[in-house]
Length: 273
Image (cartoon, rainbow, N blue to C red; front, side, top):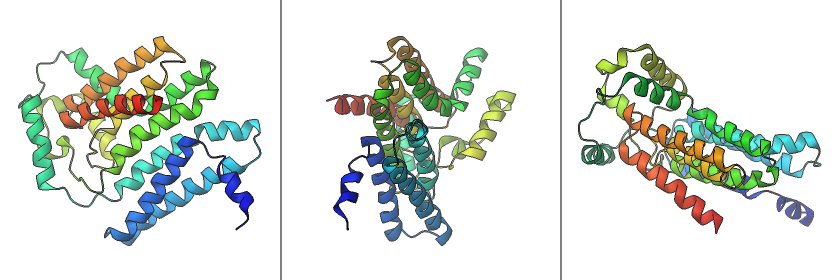
Protein backbone atom coordinates (compact mmCIF):
# COMPACT_ATOMS: atom_id res chain seq x y z
CA UNK A 1 0.00 0.00 0.00
CA UNK A 2 1.23 3.48 -0.84
CA UNK A 3 2.44 5.23 2.32
CA UNK A 4 0.84 8.48 1.20
CA UNK A 5 -2.59 6.96 1.80
CA UNK A 6 -1.71 6.30 5.42
CA UNK A 7 -0.51 9.88 5.76
CA UNK A 8 -3.80 11.14 4.34
CA UNK A 9 -5.76 9.04 6.84
CA UNK A 10 -4.21 11.11 9.62
CA UNK A 11 -6.29 14.02 8.32
CA UNK A 12 -9.33 12.45 9.94
CA UNK A 13 -10.74 14.42 12.85
CA UNK A 14 -11.11 12.78 16.25
CA UNK A 15 -14.91 12.69 15.90
CA UNK A 16 -14.55 11.05 12.48
CA UNK A 17 -12.17 8.42 13.86
CA UNK A 18 -14.68 7.65 16.62
CA UNK A 19 -17.47 7.24 14.07
CA UNK A 20 -15.40 4.99 11.81
CA UNK A 21 -14.28 2.91 14.80
CA UNK A 22 -17.87 2.48 15.99
CA UNK A 23 -19.11 1.24 12.62
CA UNK A 24 -16.14 -1.10 12.23
CA UNK A 25 -17.02 -2.42 15.69
CA UNK A 26 -20.62 -3.04 14.60
CA UNK A 27 -19.40 -4.83 11.47
CA UNK A 28 -17.05 -7.02 13.52
CA UNK A 29 -19.65 -8.11 16.08
CA UNK A 30 -22.17 -8.79 13.31
CA UNK A 31 -19.90 -11.69 12.34
CA UNK A 32 -20.26 -13.35 15.74
CA UNK A 33 -23.78 -12.42 16.79
CA UNK A 34 -26.52 -14.51 15.21
CA UNK A 35 -28.77 -12.20 13.18
CA UNK A 36 -31.08 -12.56 10.16
CA UNK A 37 -29.21 -11.90 6.88
CA UNK A 38 -31.27 -8.76 6.19
CA UNK A 39 -30.18 -7.24 9.49
CA UNK A 40 -26.54 -8.06 8.90
CA UNK A 41 -26.80 -6.41 5.51
CA UNK A 42 -28.34 -3.29 7.14
CA UNK A 43 -25.47 -3.03 9.61
CA UNK A 44 -22.75 -3.54 7.01
CA UNK A 45 -24.33 -1.25 4.45
CA UNK A 46 -24.61 1.55 7.02
CA UNK A 47 -20.97 0.97 7.98
CA UNK A 48 -19.91 1.10 4.33
CA UNK A 49 -21.78 4.37 3.77
CA UNK A 50 -20.36 6.09 6.84
CA UNK A 51 -16.78 4.88 6.46
CA UNK A 52 -16.66 5.61 2.72
CA UNK A 53 -18.25 9.06 3.12
CA UNK A 54 -15.96 9.94 6.03
CA UNK A 55 -12.80 8.96 4.16
CA UNK A 56 -13.93 10.63 0.94
CA UNK A 57 -14.74 13.94 2.61
CA UNK A 58 -11.54 13.88 4.69
CA UNK A 59 -9.36 13.30 1.63
CA UNK A 60 -11.18 15.73 -0.66
CA UNK A 61 -9.73 19.18 -1.44
CA UNK A 62 -10.79 21.52 1.39
CA UNK A 63 -13.24 23.73 -0.47
CA UNK A 64 -15.99 25.65 1.31
CA UNK A 65 -18.61 23.09 0.20
CA UNK A 66 -16.49 20.17 1.38
CA UNK A 67 -15.90 21.91 4.69
CA UNK A 68 -19.65 22.44 5.19
CA UNK A 69 -20.47 18.81 4.40
CA UNK A 70 -17.68 17.62 6.66
CA UNK A 71 -18.98 19.70 9.55
CA UNK A 72 -22.41 18.07 9.31
CA UNK A 73 -21.42 14.50 8.40
CA UNK A 74 -21.19 13.33 12.05
CA UNK A 75 -24.91 14.05 12.41
CA UNK A 76 -25.67 11.56 9.63
CA UNK A 77 -23.27 9.04 11.16
CA UNK A 78 -25.01 9.26 14.55
CA UNK A 79 -28.44 8.80 12.96
CA UNK A 80 -27.32 5.77 10.96
CA UNK A 81 -25.55 4.38 14.04
CA UNK A 82 -28.84 4.43 15.96
CA UNK A 83 -30.72 2.39 13.37
CA UNK A 84 -27.79 0.11 12.58
CA UNK A 85 -27.37 -0.72 16.26
CA UNK A 86 -31.10 -1.36 16.49
CA UNK A 87 -30.61 -4.27 14.10
CA UNK A 88 -28.94 -6.15 16.96
CA UNK A 89 -32.06 -6.07 19.12
CA UNK A 90 -33.44 -9.60 19.14
CA UNK A 91 -35.27 -10.28 22.40
CA UNK A 92 -35.42 -8.63 25.82
CA UNK A 93 -33.49 -10.06 28.74
CA UNK A 94 -35.91 -10.78 31.58
CA UNK A 95 -33.10 -10.40 34.09
CA UNK A 96 -31.96 -7.04 32.75
CA UNK A 97 -35.51 -5.71 32.51
CA UNK A 98 -36.15 -6.78 36.11
CA UNK A 99 -33.01 -4.90 37.18
CA UNK A 100 -34.13 -1.74 35.37
CA UNK A 101 -37.61 -1.94 36.88
CA UNK A 102 -36.17 -2.50 40.34
CA UNK A 103 -34.42 0.86 40.01
CA UNK A 104 -37.70 2.44 38.96
CA UNK A 105 -39.28 1.04 42.13
CA UNK A 106 -36.52 2.61 44.23
CA UNK A 107 -36.39 5.97 42.48
CA UNK A 108 -39.98 6.72 41.48
CA UNK A 109 -42.02 3.94 43.04
CA UNK A 110 -45.20 3.02 41.22
CA UNK A 111 -45.94 6.60 40.21
CA UNK A 112 -47.96 7.07 37.04
CA UNK A 113 -47.35 10.84 37.13
CA UNK A 114 -51.08 11.50 36.90
CA UNK A 115 -50.87 14.43 39.31
CA UNK A 116 -48.62 16.54 37.08
CA UNK A 117 -50.14 19.84 35.92
CA UNK A 118 -51.43 19.64 32.36
CA UNK A 119 -49.08 22.39 31.14
CA UNK A 120 -46.06 20.55 32.55
CA UNK A 121 -47.17 17.26 31.03
CA UNK A 122 -47.59 18.86 27.60
CA UNK A 123 -44.21 20.59 27.88
CA UNK A 124 -42.47 17.33 28.75
CA UNK A 125 -44.16 15.47 25.92
CA UNK A 126 -43.21 18.12 23.36
CA UNK A 127 -39.64 18.53 24.57
CA UNK A 128 -39.13 14.78 24.26
CA UNK A 129 -40.83 14.53 20.87
CA UNK A 130 -38.48 17.11 19.41
CA UNK A 131 -35.32 16.19 21.31
CA UNK A 132 -33.82 15.00 18.02
CA UNK A 133 -33.55 18.66 16.98
CA UNK A 134 -31.32 19.58 19.91
CA UNK A 135 -28.10 18.27 18.36
CA UNK A 136 -28.35 20.13 15.01
CA UNK A 137 -29.66 23.20 16.85
CA UNK A 138 -26.67 23.11 19.16
CA UNK A 139 -24.26 22.86 16.26
CA UNK A 140 -25.98 25.79 14.55
CA UNK A 141 -25.45 27.83 17.72
CA UNK A 142 -21.77 26.88 17.69
CA UNK A 143 -21.42 28.10 14.11
CA UNK A 144 -23.44 31.27 14.82
CA UNK A 145 -21.13 32.01 17.77
CA UNK A 146 -18.15 31.98 15.42
CA UNK A 147 -16.63 28.86 16.92
CA UNK A 148 -16.28 26.78 13.76
CA UNK A 149 -12.80 25.77 14.93
CA UNK A 150 -14.50 23.86 17.76
CA UNK A 151 -16.62 21.71 15.42
CA UNK A 152 -14.52 18.60 15.98
CA UNK A 153 -14.58 19.11 19.74
CA UNK A 154 -18.39 19.47 19.65
CA UNK A 155 -18.94 16.34 17.58
CA UNK A 156 -16.41 14.32 19.57
CA UNK A 157 -18.29 14.90 22.81
CA UNK A 158 -21.71 14.33 21.24
CA UNK A 159 -20.52 11.21 19.39
CA UNK A 160 -19.13 9.65 22.56
CA UNK A 161 -22.36 10.53 24.38
CA UNK A 162 -24.36 8.72 21.69
CA UNK A 163 -22.16 5.79 20.68
CA UNK A 164 -21.53 4.48 24.19
CA UNK A 165 -25.27 4.12 25.02
CA UNK A 166 -25.89 2.68 21.55
CA UNK A 167 -22.99 0.27 21.99
CA UNK A 168 -24.47 -1.48 25.03
CA UNK A 169 -27.61 -2.55 23.14
CA UNK A 170 -26.21 -5.72 21.54
CA UNK A 171 -25.35 -6.98 25.03
CA UNK A 172 -27.99 -5.41 27.31
CA UNK A 173 -31.38 -5.83 25.65
CA UNK A 174 -34.65 -4.57 27.13
CA UNK A 175 -37.94 -3.06 26.09
CA UNK A 176 -38.76 0.55 26.97
CA UNK A 177 -41.30 0.90 29.81
CA UNK A 178 -44.11 2.06 27.49
CA UNK A 179 -43.88 -1.21 25.57
CA UNK A 180 -44.34 -3.22 28.79
CA UNK A 181 -46.77 -1.21 30.87
CA UNK A 182 -49.46 -0.64 28.27
CA UNK A 183 -51.72 2.39 27.91
CA UNK A 184 -52.54 4.71 30.82
CA UNK A 185 -55.47 7.06 31.32
CA UNK A 186 -53.12 9.96 30.57
CA UNK A 187 -52.36 8.47 27.16
CA UNK A 188 -55.73 9.58 25.79
CA UNK A 189 -54.65 13.19 25.19
CA UNK A 190 -53.87 14.23 21.62
CA UNK A 191 -50.29 15.26 22.50
CA UNK A 192 -49.64 11.89 24.12
CA UNK A 193 -51.15 10.00 21.20
CA UNK A 194 -48.82 11.90 18.89
CA UNK A 195 -45.84 11.04 21.10
CA UNK A 196 -46.64 7.34 21.10
CA UNK A 197 -47.27 7.35 17.36
CA UNK A 198 -43.97 9.17 16.78
CA UNK A 199 -42.04 6.72 18.93
CA UNK A 200 -43.67 3.74 17.23
CA UNK A 201 -42.79 5.04 13.79
CA UNK A 202 -39.28 6.41 14.33
CA UNK A 203 -37.52 4.41 17.06
CA UNK A 204 -35.95 0.97 17.19
CA UNK A 205 -38.41 -0.14 19.93
CA UNK A 206 -35.55 -1.06 22.24
CA UNK A 207 -34.22 0.52 25.41
CA UNK A 208 -30.69 1.93 25.45
CA UNK A 209 -28.79 1.96 28.73
CA UNK A 210 -27.80 4.59 29.58
CA UNK A 211 -30.24 6.87 27.78
CA UNK A 212 -28.68 8.25 24.61
CA UNK A 213 -31.28 11.01 24.60
CA UNK A 214 -30.27 12.24 28.05
CA UNK A 215 -26.55 11.80 27.46
CA UNK A 216 -26.39 13.49 24.06
CA UNK A 217 -28.72 16.34 25.03
CA UNK A 218 -26.57 17.30 28.01
CA UNK A 219 -23.41 16.78 25.94
CA UNK A 220 -24.66 19.43 23.50
CA UNK A 221 -25.13 21.89 26.35
CA UNK A 222 -21.69 21.15 27.78
CA UNK A 223 -20.07 21.49 24.36
CA UNK A 224 -21.46 25.04 24.07
CA UNK A 225 -20.22 26.35 27.41
CA UNK A 226 -17.12 28.08 26.02
CA UNK A 227 -18.67 29.42 22.81
CA UNK A 228 -22.11 30.48 24.07
CA UNK A 229 -22.44 30.14 27.86
CA UNK A 230 -25.93 31.65 28.16
CA UNK A 231 -27.30 29.48 25.38
CA UNK A 232 -25.51 26.51 26.93
CA UNK A 233 -27.48 27.09 30.13
CA UNK A 234 -30.76 27.08 28.17
CA UNK A 235 -29.70 23.88 26.43
CA UNK A 236 -28.85 22.41 29.83
CA UNK A 237 -32.37 23.12 31.05
CA UNK A 238 -33.74 21.43 27.94
CA UNK A 239 -31.43 18.45 28.47
CA UNK A 240 -32.63 17.92 32.03
CA UNK A 241 -36.22 18.37 30.80
CA UNK A 242 -35.66 15.70 28.15
CA UNK A 243 -34.25 13.31 30.75
CA UNK A 244 -37.25 13.93 33.01
CA UNK A 245 -39.66 13.60 30.08
CA UNK A 246 -38.15 10.26 29.12
CA UNK A 247 -39.04 8.90 32.55
CA UNK A 248 -42.43 10.61 32.96
CA UNK A 249 -43.46 9.51 29.46
CA UNK A 250 -42.14 5.99 30.17
CA UNK A 251 -39.79 6.07 27.22
CA UNK A 252 -36.89 5.25 29.54
CA UNK A 253 -36.32 3.89 33.01
CA UNK A 254 -35.21 6.32 35.70
CA UNK A 255 -31.76 4.75 35.96
CA UNK A 256 -31.29 5.19 32.18
CA UNK A 257 -31.84 8.94 32.41
CA UNK A 258 -29.73 9.45 35.53
CA UNK A 259 -26.76 7.45 34.24
CA UNK A 260 -27.09 9.16 30.85
CA UNK A 261 -26.77 12.62 32.41
CA UNK A 262 -23.87 11.50 34.61
CA UNK A 263 -22.10 9.91 31.66
CA UNK A 264 -22.29 13.14 29.66
CA UNK A 265 -20.63 15.04 32.52
CA UNK A 266 -17.90 12.39 32.87
CA UNK A 267 -17.26 12.35 29.11
CA UNK A 268 -17.06 16.16 29.05
CA UNK A 269 -14.60 16.17 31.97
CA UNK A 270 -12.41 13.42 30.51
CA UNK A 271 -12.37 14.81 26.97
CA UNK A 272 -11.65 18.27 28.38
CA UNK A 273 -8.55 16.92 30.05
